[in-house]
Amino acid sequence: MDELVRVRFAPSPTGKLHFGSARTALFNYLFAKKFGGKFVLRIEDSDKVRSTPESEIDILEGLSWLGLSWDEGPMSDGRYGPYRQSERAEIYKEFIDRMAESKDAYYCFCSQEELAEEREKQEKAHQMPKYSGKCRGLSESDIAGLTKEGKKPAIRFKVSDEVIEFDDLIKGPMKFDMSLFGDFVIVGSDGNPLFLLTNLIDDSLMKISHVLRAEDHLSNTPKQLLLFKALGLMAPEYGHLPLILNPDKSKISKRKNPASLTEDFRDKGYLPEAMINFMALLGWHPANDKEIFSLGDLETEFSLDKVSKSPAIFDIQRLDYINGYYIRQKKIGDLANLCLPFMEKCNPAAFIEAQAKPEYLLQAVSMVQERMKRLDEICELTHYFFGNDLNYDAELLVPKNAKKSDIANYLKAGLAELQEIEIFGPDNLEKTLIGTVAKLKITNGELLWPIRVALTGEKASPGVFELLSVLGKERSLKRIQDAITKLEK
RNA sequence: GCCGCCAUCGUCUAGCGGUUAGGACGCAAGGUUCUCAACCUUGUAAUACGGGUUCGACUCCCGUUGGCGGUACCA
Image (cartoon, rainbow, N blue to C red; front, side):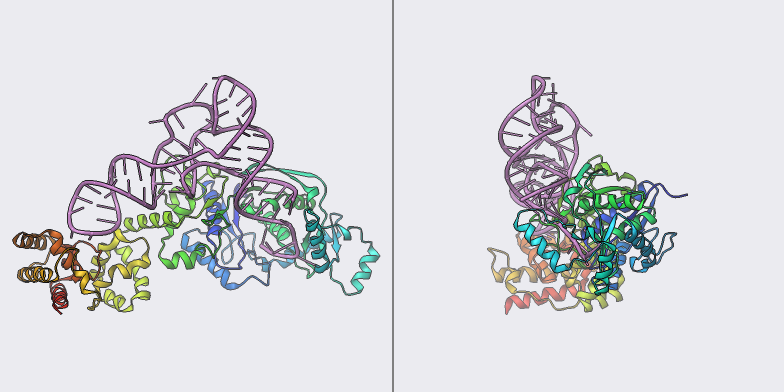
């Protein structure tokens, strides 16, 4: 038995997995899960020049990272394989032959130059560029002659003058006057079938029931519908997803926005669950005002009628917010493990120290958990927990409207009190230092601020008492002493 | 140019003829406070325009404008 719902994600491996494509994949995946169907991954590498194995690997990695596992695809079982177009040449051949002999298509010997010239003329005359149909009437002997001259023909599909109507799953009723379209090429002069053809053959052979693709394919749909009819094949249902745009409203691109899933998101410290949540909310909304969704939630709550028709602008601030939210939800051990690779990259020395002292790492990470929006911030956020050299300007120790000498004295007083503490825990520390503040008749900030800077070299940090406690007595006292020295220099 | 899609706060969006036009991000103010963050409270801000239809339009229809997409022997 065939499943009722079979959807596919069919990227061409001509670059890194793109954010927009990933969202298309997500929506397909969710649609399949929602209806208990199958999610098929098909690699459309029919463009041999632009396709690369690296790109395919990146796509597979990206999808896996997001958790969008495919039921059928390259390197996994499936009855309708192979799932890579470059391995399906034999399959296409039969269809190519059929079209070549069919009255619905014909050989076209027009050269690229001729076509370009024709197009240019039409544009100048303010007409919609459209193939003239020049080769439509070529006779058998014409074809034989041209072939003898060594000319390689392309195969063009004869577009009939009719109005094609279909019901888009997302956009609703659609109507195209095909007399406005020229005959399009389905097989190149090199003998290789083109997108419009292969894409449709595969959808048909792979028993795809619903095609959810980006809106830039909308005007391909009537052409493919015509092809389906000519081949006597059943067409799937089509749904076109609104595009994702740059902040300047142009189609999302690498120049204006981070776009590569692996490079710009995974490697920058975004969490897959945040990406999923963010992507889902770009063009889809739930029945209520809920805004946090796991992949599992989405699998049950997703529905096409809640997909919006208008394009959405990619808003990185919102992504950062959602990512921060998911970081805060992490168990501290898991978060530490996620941070480690980033630490290894940005601060190898700290990485080594952190690995040697896992408990200490845990404490450091838990201290900055709610301040982190991306995992790659781990180094700037925790650098002062590792190593001994703090680089900061002595001026930083002195709050506005305070005197250098006063601050040095406060620190000395604090240092003296801290030396007496046996158990270096937050509660003890707080009691002691607040006592010091009272004795000195100053405000909390006047003592705590310079201590913070002494401990971290930063003007923003976790609470001073927690900091002291985690850093430990020895490290803390030394840093305060260093600060005093700095001030008195 | 032609064809198509789209149009609510800056952004993501709710709304499916009668609402104080709701939520979230952002921003601002306040609370908490040793700083930052988190958290809580409050505020800010939208129906592109013009015609219809209707007792009544954000909502339905038409037009205009604008944005985007397509217009390939790319996918």
